[in-house]
Length: 111
Length: 117
Image (cartoon, rainbow over all chains, first blue to last red; front, side, top):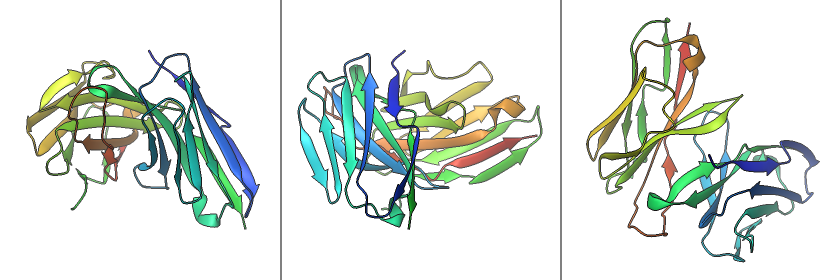
């Protein structure tokens, strides 16, 4: 089946630093999605990307849909304590746009 | 909108017992997904429905798992008999899918934390 490899698995950063994480796949996706999950809650969509090469921002978050359609990255600028959580990438493909989730990046922000 | 509603939020049961998890999708959404999340395996898609019809159940672990969607506003995921390795957080998500390559956002419920002793 399709697999999405997310890196890094976890990261500790100082408040105010920028963060970068990425997602790669051996398969092509039609859409790329980035979600954040807070403890005890379900994932919440941060950014959705629909075209290869697309660069989209949502506040301090910026994500890009790779030209090859096999990768995507998410950047967070000027991190704050509430950015703590697990970030998942997800790719949509095939009939009914089945969504496959990545393995997640756990982010810890040190105040 | 109340969002995706799942019940119960927590379930503790003994091995061998039947477990039923419930989900009410967002009104107007026509696709529903069941996921399982564990530390070891991450977020796994178990099954998804479109217009109440199961489209892909290839993620269902084994025959002990079954899912139904009798109408657009309700779905169940049943495990019978349950085993300790089924312990996980089970999420339901819904979206509106209008066809082709377009896809709308999946909205997740708060999850059901299942513990099988």
